[in-house]
Length: 80
Image (tube, rainbow, N blue to C red; front, side):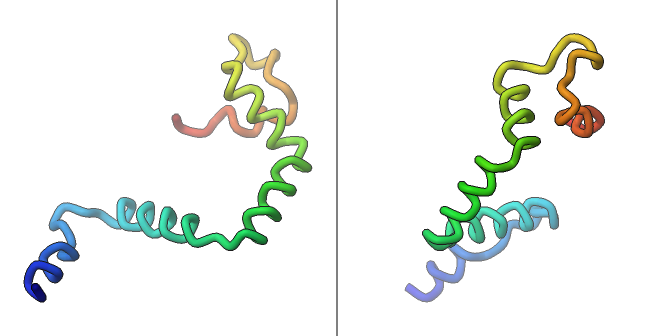
């Protein structure tokens, strides 16, 4: 039983730091307390820039840069 347990947790050879960091972030997010979750939800709702950006992402980015809301212009240069 100990060997099977050990093998199930043995890291893959081709995992890079980014993959490991992403997995750790998922674990951290999964363990958010209820009060922290509520704080994040309230802050998200109160953040005007986030709300505008969220709408742009859901509706799709405008065809031209001049149509992008001012609150979302900062995010134009980010890689997809």
